[in-house]
Each structure stands twice: as C-alpha cells, then as structure tokens.
Image 1: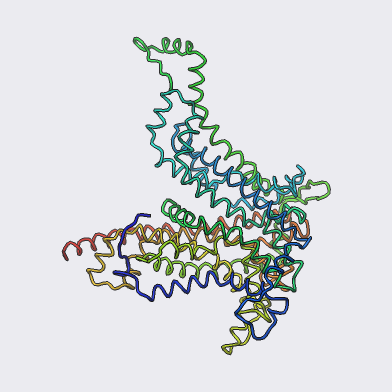
Image 2: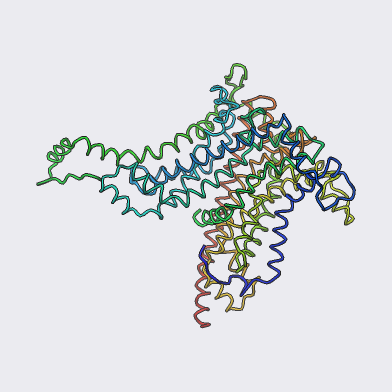
Length: 283
Length: 341
C-alpha cells in the first residue's frame, strides 16, 4: 500500500471514538481464544461453576497433554498429515498456477482467450458437489484413507491460475521474454528464469492462502480419510466425540491444534492482509 | 522466435514451402516449442479440473438416476426416482429452510458490520497494519475449531452467553434446542470468521475511491455520515455485490459449523440446524445411499445456480442504474468543486 497521509470520510486524525470501536472489534476477535484458554486451563467442573472466574486456572498443559495423547484422536499423526497435505498442495498449486498463468499472460496461442474464460467460469463451480463420484472413484482405486485422496483433487485451483495470470500480465515485461527467446532460450527455460522470478511476490501470497485453506479444510478430508489417518480438523471432530462431557480437554485440544496457524499468522499476517486487499481490487 | 526464414525473392508459396522443408531439426523444435508449449503449461489445470471437478459433477447426474449398490459399487437405472424421493422427504425441506435461515442471519449483519469496520479502517490510523491483522485473525482459525468454541459458549445450561444473559436478568435461551436461536449461534460462528475478511475487501474498494469526491462533498458541506452514505456506499456497491455473491455460494454449502455444533452431528433432535450439505452427508455416508446423495448434490447445485443467476440479474440492474447516478453525481460534484474554488 502506498504510504500517504490522507483523509477520507473523516477529516484529520480519526477520533478516539473510532479507536475505541476498533478496540471493541479486536477484543471480539480475540475473546473466543481467551475463553478457550479459560475453560481449557480449568478442570471438568470449571464450566459448571456458578461464579466463573475470569482468571485462568493452572491445568492447561495437563489438559492439552491429555487431549493430545488420547489414542482415538491420533493428534501427532494428524499434525504431520496436515503439514504434509498443506505443504504439498500449496507448493503444487503455486507451481502449476504460475505455469498456466505465464502461458495465459505472456504467450500467444490459439484459443487462449476462451480457455481463460473457461478457467474463470470453473471458479463458480462448487467442486465439492462432486463428492459422491469422487468418493466412488477413490474407493475403486483403493485410495480412501490415504493422503493422496485429499491432495490430488487440490493440486491446482482456478483461483490460483486467475491470480497468477493477473499478476504476471503486469509484472513481467513482454520485451524481456522476447529478448530471452532471441538469445535462444527455450520456452521452459524462459519460464523458469523469468516467469518464476517475476511471480515471486504473488506466489508467496498464493502459497499462504492455499496453505491456510487446506489446513482448515474439513468436508472432503472428513469423508475420505478415516480415524486412523486424519488431518487436524478431522482429529478435532473426534475430540468432541470422545470427550463430550469434559470441555476443558476439548478446548485445550482446540487451542493446541490452532496454535500452528496462529504462529504462521503472526509472521505472515501482513502479507495475508495485503494479498486479500490486492485480490479485491483486481477481482 | 529463435529463427525466422525470410522468403528471398517474390515470396511465392512454392518457395516458402521449400524453405520450410529445409528447416533443420533445431529450428523445427523451436517452432514446436513456441506453438505447443503453452498448451502443455495450461494442461495440468484442465486435467485436474476435469478429473476432480467436471467429471464428478457430470457423473453425479448419472449416479443420481440410479439405485447405487455399495457392494458391487455400481448402479441400476431407475429414472428420476431419487429426485422424487428427496423432494417428498420432509427433512429435505427442513434442511433447505435451515440453510437459507442461517445464510440470511449471517450475510446481512456481516455485510453491515464489515462495511462499518472497513470505514473505520479507511482512516489515517496509527499502527494501521496491526488493526488490519487484528480483524483478520479469526479467518485463520479452522471452522471446526470455531464451532467447538462457540457451541460451548452457546451452551444451553452453563454456556457463557446464557450466564451473561441471566446476569442482566434475561431468561436463558435454549441455543441447542430452539430453531432460531440455534441458527443465530451458527450464524455467529460464520460472522466471527468472515466479517474481518470481508471488511478488508471492502476497505480495498474504499481506498480506490477518488479523493476529490470526498473533497468536493466536504466543500459542499456534507458531514462525515452524509459523506459515508452519499459517496462511500455508492462507490463500493460493485464490491459489496461481489462479497454477497461469494458469501451466497459459500453460505449455501455450509457444513463444518452445524456439523460440529453438537456431539452427534445430525443437526439436532428435531433437525433444527440440519443443512443441505449435512443432509447430503447423512444420506451418502450415514445411510450409504449414493444415488440419493447424488440427487441431493444436483439439487443443491441447481439451487446455487438459480440464486447466482438471480444475483447476477439484480447486480446488473443495480450497477447499471448506479453507474448513471454515479456519473452524474461525479460530474456535478466536480463542477461544484470547481465553482467552489
């Protein structure tokens, strides 16, 4: 974002009232985490006590420990699975989207216009409506219960292709490609050296988005994976089924499972914010 | 292009053809490279979409006309029997009602709140990035986790909300028993996760508004609130419609939040918060009736298409009407601005 001082609907600096309102919003967006910590650091009876203390208890680590070590939940396996699925999906989406985006933005070929329209049209198609045949296909292949069943349908997305096309068409000068071609560079080397390099900032944002979305995805993994080999959201759903009385364990487990993305957010939230805002202007 | 063969004289077709046949393999490879590699680069997307998107949706239509046998993993053609069954099932209509109710309860307050938050963020704030990150924070939390936290806060007997309500003298609300309260609780989870995200999108639209519009309005004597309603809102309307459309497509498919709202995941004792996607799941993987589940999937697909088309129609009317207004307003504002100076 350009650094500029300006006024919009207010003149001059915003009033303290605006800051107060924003602070309320901020408290609202953080409160559920605190509530989880409050319950998750108590014991089974905390939630039932008449006079709830707003100060956390001291049992968080033992509760988290107990939720994690529950054999039915498979927490560590779920964590590793989530890391694998999200990383592979993000890497492949970024690479394949950049490849297609490079072709759409910078190469001339017959039918490129209609094909790009087709890509954009597929964004409106809710892919998860095909779950029944997708499940039948996976079970015929014997892939149900494996991570491949989650990764393969998500290898590349229409959004990713669209996003990289938009970015590369303005970020990569066509003259540069022509120069490389004149120097005898093959197409794929041109892509490798020029396309991938120019795409880096947009690729980082796409990776972040894809990683977050995949990490939080529930519906399809819930259908196709089984309890022995879950991703984190699937494991969380088992947490409740197992500890339906003791919310101190459930919410401690929820917080631990949420921690990796919260840490990621602290380091990359800035990029996520500007990614969403840039996408909005282009979309 | 690495090579170009210029026809030496006359450039007759005969000559060009001869030249072409004299291209060596390197040059020919270069030509193929230029001609065909773009298709190679876009192929992965279309293959993945074909395998995981297009084929399943078409095949869903095929399966929905069948009585699917799970043991043989194949079906038997029965015509529109599955659709007939679904459309005569009371639960389907309950699920449809719940889905729309939850959607409306989330979309409308969310849009209002997101617009207000965006307007507050669209000011010369100190620590701007921190505020923006703060409102986006809930977005990174998995819907499953959000649902577990909120279903606890909205507990019927010992939940936080009911405790607070009784503190101020209001009778506890049966969030997990009554229909509308359960929809409000689920809509709250959706709003928690998406309001900040949408606020950032609207904020981006607000920052794209030309500043002279505000200056002109200020010179005309419009106060903050007036400027918000007469300049900001009309200018960001296309983006608002975009937000509404994406919220519709996502909202009609809602599954994670209502599924995790209680331990059984069946949508409540009387299906108070059963949604269409939950209904699909229960038929497909609870009763293992794939033909019927496929019929539900297609019905949901048709509903989404219908709503999207309706949205589109309304959008076009709105936006084109709005454009005319916008243009005239813009010019008149500019004129007055010039006159004022």
